[in-house]
Length: 492
Image (cartoon, rainbow, N blue to C red):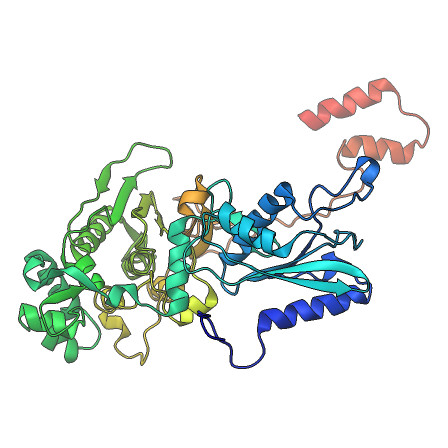
């Protein structure tokens, strides 16, 4: 058709149209709408059509309450990928009350209520003599707010409020745009010499001694080009290069040290310097506060850190690399006693986003992982592990079989603004000796100590063995005097 501009195209049948047709066939077969609704397809009855006692009233061509209600629901369906559709005229219990709304009036009214941002498609459908309306919307190219100015999207069969940062992050990921590889407003002359020196130091400590050593000894411009943080042939840095080597606009890392939970902080490290400098400062602070433990028996004693340094560094770098850089919240590192907790803002990416790098968890920042967290101990492995696997391997390599790395998504108090935040926790659970393994200073350590055999608990032993013995001898009633005597002997 001439004059029609389409922003989407399918090779083959439209998946959304197929879902609508399948739902209509199942409705005609008498199935309950609650059992056949999907994330993209929903059945609704027209608001304002119920009278006293639930009686169905006569419908009209214009219904303002219905238009506002449907505008909110369709905006919720338009914000997630794929869009959605509403079959109007079917109640939740399956009753077909139909609708008499004028489709052109409804389309224009929803367009006005959503700030002229949402244009829907309304198609009348006859379902065995009942007139229905199928309202279809495609996924939006920008977040669409409802009539109250809030942005919602569909999660399962519910509408959940979402912040614009999370919405744009999902949009960039679906379009395949790598935000970290886009050019920034900084050039090579804006880089920090200290950050460049930190990068060289990390590269010298990395696993691959050939290429990494050559990059560590290169000049500044060649080093940045080897790290692939220069956008084009000119001197412009990518967003990843700007984060790593130029001062950050906000705090990137916030390290807090406490001796015990709930105590005042004894050290706090945070700055707006280049991200590599912040990583180095936080790593040094963790090393300083990480106490040394002694292990072993006899004259030979071994020393190890309370938290394995390799696992601690991997947890920190993982929280910095895969965080959401569209938010201004820092990556928080809480070092309390022998527990290290890394909180990364932005939420856990979906499974597809972990395979295909998300735009706001930039792939260009993997240079930070390869240079800062890869150690010489990984030289023999063809593909170094990352994430929690590397944290676990670092803990086991250091002999910490009781150090448990955990990762979970913890929602912050203001969920609508910040969203869920992944939290990785390293806990040192040193094995304490059992009571039977303790020996006094005068005992012979080579003499095996016998454990006192435990006797099976007898039935009725909770009161007194003497009372049980008396009861077995005298089946008759026991006097109060005998009970008091038994209780006194049990106390002694």
